[in-house]
Amino acid sequence: MVGTMSVRQQQAELEELQAALRVAYDLAFDQEPPAGEQAEVLVDALRRALVAAQALSDGPGETGCREHPRGAVDPLHGDKQDPLPPGWGRCLLCNDRRRRAAGRRRR
Figure 1 (cartoon, rainbow, N blue to C red):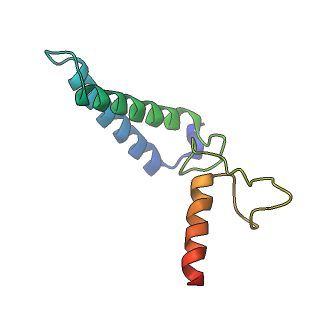
Figure 2: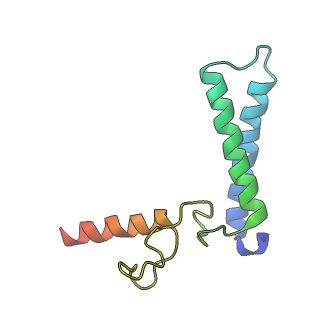
């Protein structure tokens, strides 16, 4: 659902996809097969390309978060004994950022 993503986000994802694919192409079609650190850079570039391509095609993932659609779901989401504060979503990354910010305010 590309409609849930802003034009600016779409452009950023497209640019990330293109940059990652350029790196992967350069490494994969070099004179020598990638090895060692180059192979690690190739794998990283392909992962980044996959994440960017999925973001363009899917929209919000399991977390429902626009910033971290493929992020981890907070294990406390839906926990009746230790509920999350009102307004907090399923995204563990965003909730951790909120927890750290709340901790800084208390000091």
